[in-house]
Image 1 (cartoon, rainbow, N blue to C red):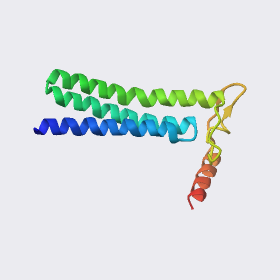
Image 2 (image 1 turned 90 degrees about the horizontal axis):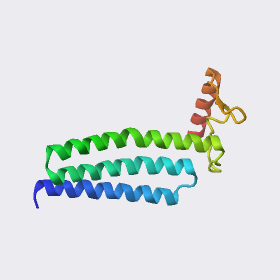
Image 3 (image 1 turned 90 degrees about the vertical axis):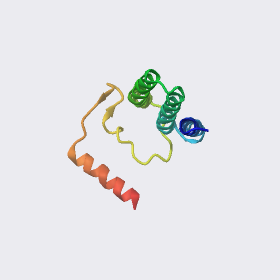
Image 4 (image 1 turned 30 degrees about the vertical axis):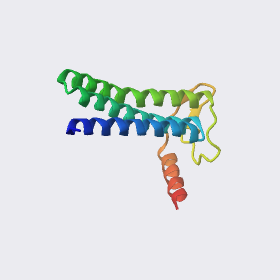
Length: 136
């Protein structure tokens, strides 16, 4: 087994492992927003590693360039898409997990007009203080 085959197998197995972690995250996490967080990060990196493994397998500049373009596209679009879906789910009223400590958008989102208002400095200080107190 050559060096390139070892790198290829390592990348593909690492990518498959991360995709498996994303699938487990879907099953184990308690609410939609946390599931999306776990899934997006692990599946995006897992897919990128698998595409990199395929690029190493073919040992071609053309395939490597296309693989790099696919990886950049994945790293840009997947988190943005997940953010937009999570935001839409929040605005539609998908319930949060019962142990969610702070709903940062709750006081800034008007459910009747569907508008967000900017946070004031005092409110930001209160949120920071609550987070610090929670960590203790």
